[in-house]
Length: 72
View 1 (spheres, rainbow, N blue to C red):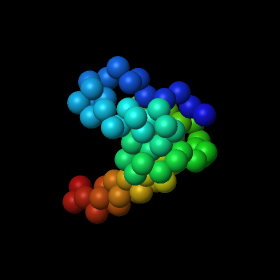
View 2 (cartoon, rainbow, N blue to C red):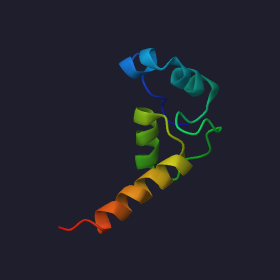
View 3 (tube, rainbow, N blue to C red):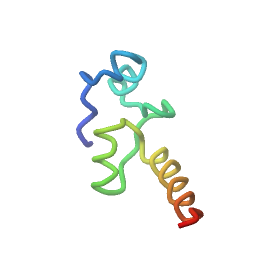
View 4 (cartoon, one colour):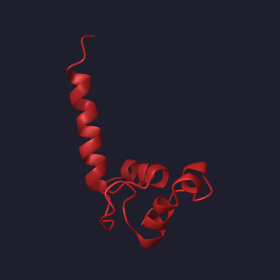
C-alpha cells in the first residue's frame, strides 16, 4: 500500500470527512474501499489526492479525452 496523503494539508482541515476516509482506507473521491494500484504513478497520485485506482482511471481518461479534442 502506498503512503497516504499528508493529513496536515489545509484541505483536510477544511474538509475533515476526507481525512476520515483516508483513515478508514477509503477513496477521498468515491468513498469506496481502496483496491490495489496498477503502477507506481497511481500510487504516487494516491499519496497526493487519496483517490483510488478506479477514480484515477476515470478522471485521467476524461482529461486525456479532452486533450485529444483540443483545437491545438
